[in-house]
Image 1 (tube, rainbow, N blue to C red):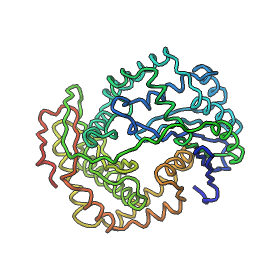
Image 2 (cartoon, rainbow, N blue to C red):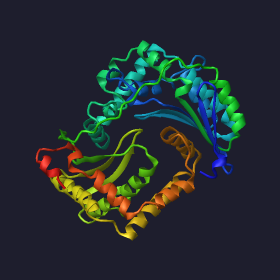
Image 3 (cartoon, helix red, strand yellow):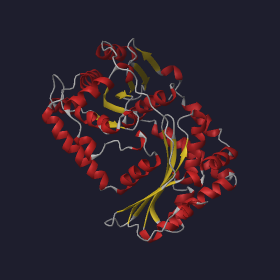
Length: 424
């Protein structure tokens, strides 16, 4: 991320925040408008509404049709996209530096002046139905949704980002417009940009586009979830493989613990030399795909292991994953293994920050979760500072059989997994 003096943060009178980072060796600029609303800010009836609105904003504004928008993007050779997560929604544009004004103009038009045409709403509703069905047909995504729903039972974090067929069916035009007006307000918006840019010029353009808007709605209160330990099994006979998600609660976003979580995750299942990959795939040939990941939210998170295996090997694979949990709790990892995990983390992080779009996203996530920017050297020091004792202590804190959740999808008839099987 370069020296901290390169990154500039500006807060406008209405609460809108702009953060920029120059990357002088590039000819591209990535600019993103981030809205601090996602599926966790929705009521059960609204489930999927942030995602629905994200789709609709590309469908035309007061002065541009959907085709006009597509033509502008294509005419400058740019890339434009959007995505919704559980905690935020993003619209971004990557263009040559010469075309930054066009990107800002288009992004601000989409986010400020969308035209919710009834016929476009109905078309997009059908598209979202297809997206929901696609998840049903994508076992690794579906098992994650099943896991989340069980793990965060009764909490908005457990609901699918895209909503459900009944919730999306119930979203009428007035409801969509009201949610949009309440959510897309300056105090909820963060604009980040990275690449070959001039902060002052961009601040003027952003100020002109967004500064006139007042705020009229209050923040949506969020409550931290209480994870539920459970086993959930969904039969899907047409699947050739059994898909498993096994997870435990871990922390949200406190900076101190995140480095420990990253190192532990890397050791467990984050690389090809990790314990899970070596023991389950390389030594036993029981899975083509097996890995672990850390999912962090503002106030909670989980460490999750995913594996796809044959139905008859399901129980053995679960046992092998639990064995790794037990071993990590049993004693400190070796110096060499710890060093490899840290070096992998540092290398992959440095590589991931080489493009303007990844830097732009990084600026937003750090602001959103930590309220400040961490320098590369700070992050490297954080990773280097993790000790064998830290990893052992964290393992003993989080790998608790009483807090394990397991989701299984596929031909589950002969699995025979019960609560006893999750002891380790």
